[in-house]
Image (cartoon, rainbow, N blue to C red; front, side, top):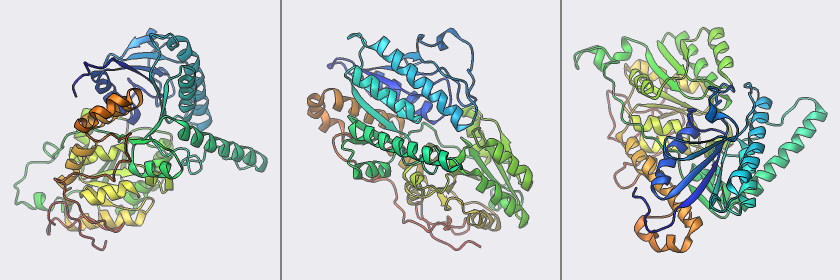
Length: 492
């Protein structure tokens, strides 16, 4: 992406509750977007709390983390740290922390960016947390800047299934139910009044358009992950030996998960499936690395069922590659909540780019993506029996199938960091200088903000497959299908 030379630099102010040096999907998203925006002539400032995710405690007591301190990020961005409140994994505690940070954002945003020389052209509020959206709107309106709300998840629709504002006692339940309705209406109203709404999937963009949101741009989550192949993770063996052709007749099936361990991920289904498969006499080993609000629940279930599951702490990026190389299949899992059918976990793009076989316990757009690119096998969320049948079939066959190379090609065409950075630059151009933007739009490619984007496509090089039933698996290694094709089969 070449830098802008003929146009004056623009200024984007990002309001977010999660930023580097924390690790996670939102931190990684803006860690890749920021240098590409700066290179294209967009100055980036960030209003964010000091790093305290996921533990809720400050990483380190450094001067640059104190409220109001301004420092430079690794890409040259200006970072302003807000106040925060230490919190536990409880929802109420985390919500108070987000509210404190949002209020501090408004105070510091008006104090530091009201001078004309520092005033932003665009304020982006990224959700979650939801209070960041309200803080960004206030700052944008008082500074007379364009307001962009970035919905990384399907809010406000996740409020109900996620159990926010829910209580058992009748009076408290009525009060919280009314609060839930107010938050839902307010978030929807801000979406409709924003100068642009950014979503990470086509499906949720269509949902918002159906509700009257006028300008919706799709900028997917991205990945820089590269292909991972088994190497040192496997013992040396002759290509014709039984250990090579049918390894699962000689060792357990290996499944891996790396990421957030929260309610939305529903890893209890994975634990129950692993225990049930073991009880049926089929060897399986599951490794789960990560942390989150449901870690304790998952750990207790593993102990209760004596499941063949090993839990580990989050690991650095380079060790994720080793974990994937060890595994026969990599898990991507979401709970059976309708709004999650409108999302695609960023972890799925990573698995697709790695070339490893995905076991996708997902529905909606994510399931369609796995099926149409040959990235792996789809099991309906929460379907323990379906997951047992799927893995059991692979064990009986002696080997897990191989993911189609079409999956990695799709990621390169649709979820590459450079492609997504270019989309965000186009959005900034559209909002700050529409005339110049339209004059150059033809030679710079389609703009996400100018037209409603088409359904996701892998481009002419990608082999498109037909959809499969939720319990369908990839073809047996003994009878491989042509690259990119999935054949439904009945699980044993």
